Amino acid sequence: MTQQRPERVRVTSPWTERPRLHQRRTATSEIDAQSEVGEIYLRTLLRAQLRLALAVLLGLALTVGMLPLVFWLVPWFNEHHVLGMPVSWVLLGFGCYPVLSLLAWRYVQRAERNERAFARVVDRS
Amino acid sequence: MSPALGFVAVLLVTVATLAIGTWGLRFSRTTSDFFVASRSVRPGLNAYAISGEYISGASFLGIAGLVLVNGAEMLWYPVGWTAGYLVLLCLVAAPLRRSGAYTLPDFAEARLDSRAVRTASSILVVAIGWLYLMPQFQGAGVALRSTTGMPPWAGGLVVASVVLLNVLAGGMRSITFVQAFQYWLKLTALLVPVVFLLMVWLGDGAQSPADSSVVVEQVSGLDWSDPIDFVAGHPIYSTYSLMIATFLGTMGLPHVVVRFYTNPDGVAARRTTLAVLALLGCFYVLPPVYGALGRLYAPDLVADGRGDSVVLELPARMIGGLGGDLLVALLTAGAFAAFLATSSGLTVAVAGVVSQDVFSRRVEGVTAFRLAAVVAVVVPFALAILARDVAVATVVGLAFAMAAATFSPLLVLGIWWRGLTAAGALAGLAVGGVLTGTAVVDNLVTDRTVGWTAALLNQPAAWAVPAAFATMIGVSRMTRHRAPAHAARFMVRLHTPESVQLQRD
Image 1 (cartoon, rainbow over the protein chains, first blue to last red):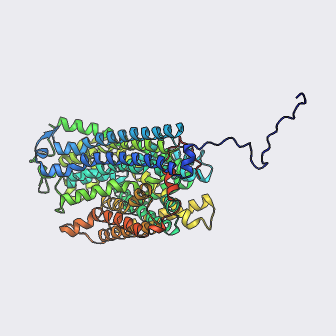
Image 2: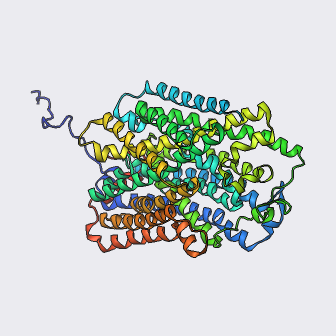
Image 3: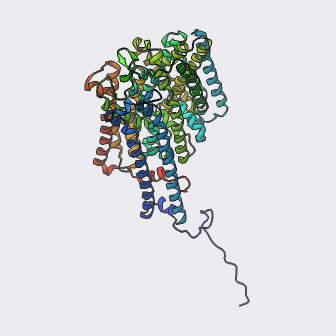
């Protein structure tokens, strides 16, 4: 066959801006379409973030949240002095803030890690 | 001290505020600039601005006064005000930013697709905003009277006018710079004098204010320094109720939430919150020191009922002379900045809601915002003049309780539970609003001090917040079939990191 065949021309609809490429279902499209798979992806992230938030808030409840009960039940904190003030006063006036900042710092670290892990899983699939 | 220095301090803060506001104006051109600084404020600058806005007169003057008069149990206030940001960070910060809404009513409408919930939220934003603005104007009056001798209404008028001028001129964008400046001013104004005061105290033999020999108004230092010693007589209940109000209320304050939309994305919103926590922690260790020193050097203020002015009085009493006067001037500047910053933030937040929901149908963009700002300032200023004098921190505490019983369940359930329905949200907002509103009215009208009724009404959060949560969940379950169709889609948007590209609508 020496006769040259005309070159194949791809015909596309004039309404699409570019020829449609072969579409693979990606994780983001699964999430967009709210398919069952997408639902699982998102639910995993949501669970992880909620568990983290509750863990940090539990930390808050067990540290700062316990102070009223501790001061009430253990008179030692009131009777002993640091820097001229009772231990309870020093804990409440100065000691709470580093604890709060530390909890917040841990939370931000972990939350960003959760999101990076989620982004990795979604990009890979 | 001479009133002249006080006047100069107030004048300098006013001029600096207006100057920075005008400088910021060069960047404000569009309606979006006025509302949310076009969502482009860096976390660092934004954190200074949020802290600067958050530290109100109640923090700057009120805590020291409360500690002086009532003792260590008042230290729970600053701790709660800071811990509120941790709760906000964990439950709300990033999803709220990702929701893409500007105000709390915007969020409610986008999440629940209901005009009724939007209207209820708007009413609550205005109520909480005015409840918080009123004591700012009153407190400014008290502060200016003690340093410059002006009549009480004049101080409020000065603050109201400067806030209005600044908001009218530049909206949110210039407010960002102004408030970042005011955080530093407030921190410096408390930090520098405290160094000198502590040196004087050490020179005087460093007597402990918690010593049993220090007796003020028949209360010995021992009782004063006990953190569980409420006058009302139900210390454990009151302390925990205050904790609930402050921990959960912060996320529902209109001027706090509005600032989160100025972050570029959810990650930045989290980092901003972390920085805010650290900045607040640095500030809040200072006011209690003034309260404690006041026990030794200004005990007569307790009997006079002028505890709120202890911060402004100490330098003159302990140091005196020109040095003392200069320190008082610095503190006056800081206090004035505190009233200005919080009032500006609240005005922008309330005006944002009023202009979008009331004026937007009649007037366009920036004009609507400016009209709304006038309304947002004039009403609480009138209330401040008419209402009876209530301690700044008491009213602010009630505003926190109201926010905790209304917007906190709406935000937490709206962000984490897809089963929330419009009917449930509406019922919960109504229950929380009515319960805390009753407590507010009771506090403003009558003066209870003893017994369970007083404890329950002074600190309503412990019962009003669970009631609001329970109503919201219960009614949502009963109207399950009416859950908004796009709830799942909205949750996707709230929780997906920006690095993952979805077809966001």
